[in-house]
Amino acid sequence: MRTRHVLLAVGLAAVWGFNFVVMEVGLRHFPPLLYVALRFGVAAFPALLFTGGPAVPWRRVLAAGATLGVAQYGLLLLGMRAGMPAGLTSLVVQVQAVFTVVLAAVLLRERITARRVTGMAVAFAGLALIAAELGGGGPVGAFLLVVGAAFAWGAGNIAVRKAAPPDSFRFMVWLSAVAAVPMAALSLLVEGVPRLEFSVEGGLSVLYVALVSTLGGFGVWGFLLKRYDASVVAPYSLLVPVFGMSSAALATGEPVSAVKLAAAVLILSGVLYAGTRPRRTASPHDGARDNMERATEAV
Image (cartoon, rainbow, N blue to C red):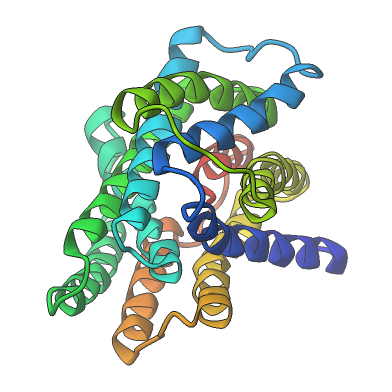
């Protein structure tokens, strides 16, 4: 990769990592389900004015919106509201890659190799470390909600693979649109009519997660994937929890214990090992297929 594109990839990882801190701030001003609805509504509305249709069957868009939009972010924000800290959340959701492998084997009949089993075992060992530490008085229920969000993310990756959208950015815009409506309805049903007072901090948090992280982030990610193989670009997504944990420590004072660091090493190394392949002679179709898959597995 060219130097400016490396800096772009690292900068994007920083944007996505800091996104977890911004969401924690947003939850001080909005109920979690309403916050998700605002995120996707703001992301979808301006972009819909300049994009065409999703270019894939509507059932595929709805499936991806239900999993990646409603389930993933609904559970994620509920977990954070229940007490899961931002930095730790940015790490735990990385196990979505492991769930993707398992669901692909069950639903798409993809083969699970010994390498992937080893990587998954290492990643889950990291999760077990976090669960053990939280079991000493931490928010275990919140942790399980975030793990559920990671599972929903994995299911969403499968939905996007089946959709195989020709334009990942346009697909993300329509995914946001179909997720915003049910999330708004769920918010009204579960959280009731909100009594909101405008605040600059809350408004900026919505704009950041919607425009910077969602639209801008996936636009940059798609730009990189069009120019480089997925195997070159995808590892930069593993920097997201690094920036997530460090920015949470700096911005909110979230402690980074030795156990969390050990868990981070296990989870990230396990995900990386399971997600890479031994060197072999590549077919001319591998790059295009892998790029589509990695586009949906980024944070």
